[in-house]
Image (cartoon, rainbow, N blue to C red; front, top):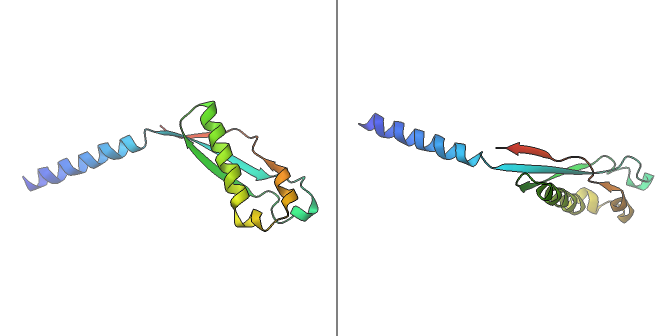
Amino acid sequence: MKNLKILLAAFSVMLFSANLYAVEYQHGYCHVRQTAPDVCQNVKGYRVMGSAIGNTHDDCTTAKNAARDNLIRSRRMQAAPAVCRDHIDCGGPCETVGG
């Protein structure tokens, strides 16, 4: 009887875990272009990710906006000259994960 309870508990955990991964997310990325001025040398190519729940174009846009915010707020970008922010690129496609 004890083994059956353990088995049922383990099965319940597996079902619950499977439902957690059924949600799809969009991962959007932003980086500082390699063509940024020389004063941006320390952040050229620096890439950051943002995430949003869902699988639509709007969700991708939300993920890219989050990535842009994460990039601007990063310590590395805070230490860089303000002109480097003008060279942030978030144009790549989003990546769908989960589901």
